[in-house]
Length: 250
Image (cartoon, rainbow, N blue to C red; front, top):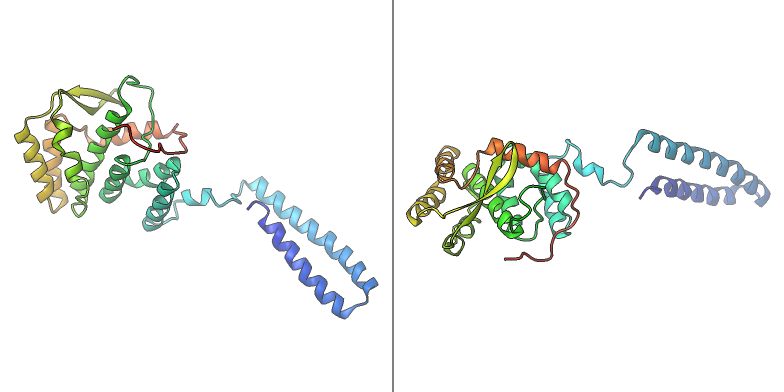
């Protein structure tokens, strides 16, 4: 990819040689080739130096991150990244939209975190089971996603699966000093969980979804979105993961 421009120059050079062969003698052609080759090499080398000095991306990878990409293009690239197990690219594509409260993107991240998408690691609470941490973040993103984008209810039954809540304790996301941490709490009463599920299920607007978010915060299940997004920003700023686990531990 980095020498595509050079190969194109060579291709043009080849066409020039064919034309020269038809019009001139071999001796004249050879002389012309020498002159043309020198010129082409100078031009191509000059272009290569220009790209290197300017820091231009010749691979095309950085172009995915340009702010000129539309929302639909980012989502398209994100789907491709997910199926290629390129988790670092996935977060880079989706999180800038998710942090702005894009409910559809939040729901997509929740769905993929529940699958094979790798959760960015932090130095805090290393003793917490990775599966429990992932599920805690799935819950946060799924609730905010459904509250802001009511058309996507794919995660509703997943996060309210009774098997996840009928245990001795539940791991939830908590923000401490601006850092994502995790706490173990007693599961809320079944009636409260049923009320929250019905709220999200029936919510058909962002205002209705906001009332569901209030319930979830009061139950201690999720932090405020502003705190969560800032804390996730800090983790992703140093995240260097490049692949997804082949399976989840749960």
